[in-house]
Amino acid sequence: MYDYQLATSRNIGWVTESEQQLLKNKRVAIAGLGGVGGAHAIMLARLGVGRFHLSDFDEYEIHNFNRQIGANMQTIGRPKLDVIREQVLSINPEAEIRVFPEGIGAENVEQFLDGVDLYVDSLDFFVMEARKTVFRACHQRQLPAITAAPLGMGCAFLAFTPDSMSFDDYFGFEGLSERDQLIRFLVGLAPTVWQRHYLVDKSTADFDSQKGPSTPMAVDLCAGIAGTNALKLLLGRGTVVKAPKGMHVDAYLNRSKVTWRPGGYRNPLQQVAFAVARKVVGKS
Image 1: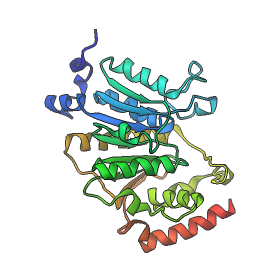
Image 2: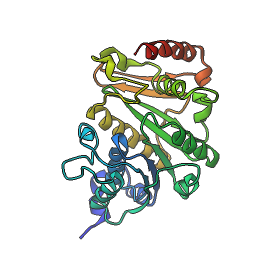
Image 3: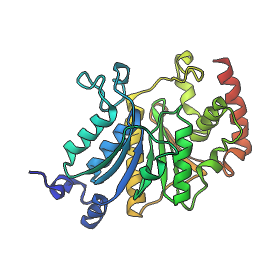
């Protein structure tokens, strides 16, 4: 017999009994359930979040095994959405889950965000149009939205809230080609670009083919950092690093830093980083 109070009892101490009940009634939207998305959903389910909007239209393949929490021999060819939904329900059979198997776009973003308390961005790095659509809708709704990107063996975290710089103002994608948007997204996520120091085979990071290497350590770091900040935002306590500030943690380099780029993409340092990255990517 499932018992929510008993299942979440080991959270108590870090959260109060009343806060745990608040989490039970919070609704979190997650778009993309591949690399970090599945890990985010499981992390938040174990935290005790009780309501989810989940979206993904992809199926598991064997090349997902190195990092995706739902990928194994039994799930090859199965929709990621179905697998993660089942895993969340296996942790909390009482969880309320609304699914969006068609993905997220302008035609359904309002339904996807309806009644939501927090959006956790988990779309593939190279998916820009859907990402811009969701973040703009969050900004219009004054809805907190976070992203935790797995880079190398680390995590780059950004939070966009009603009292922070907006996603569009921070990145400034308007007028850029798709390739340049991706480059600006990368240097905006992680102004330090620490991960470049230990990429041993640069040919594997291919913007034109829209693919790159990944590690399971980065995914789990992202889930922990995103989950911690989700707790802060959902409970309204603790300090969240908000745009134009961000946070980069790299376990391989034993480094962490709160980044700050006043003006976002307009910042002179970001403009230089963008110009350098364009040259580097052009040589790849």
